[in-house]
Length: 84
Image (cartoon, rainbow, N blue to C red; front, side):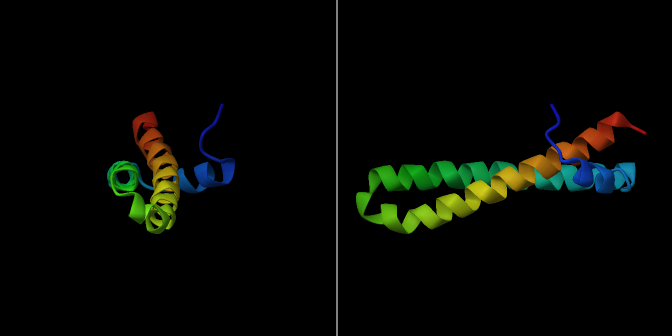
């Protein structure tokens, strides 16, 4: 099963190996930060019920950002560790 779409993988393979490492690490950090923001948003929504409505768009936004950057980080780090 491939996690990265073929068109994205084709574009990733054009990037220099060292630059792929930098891009992969940066995107992995953004994905981790997004996970933190989603967990923090759920915590706030459960703790203070009056902010739940305002937190829904932020949790959705950071969830989408986290998924996209996670896939991109996986693609670039796979490119780096593949080594060709």
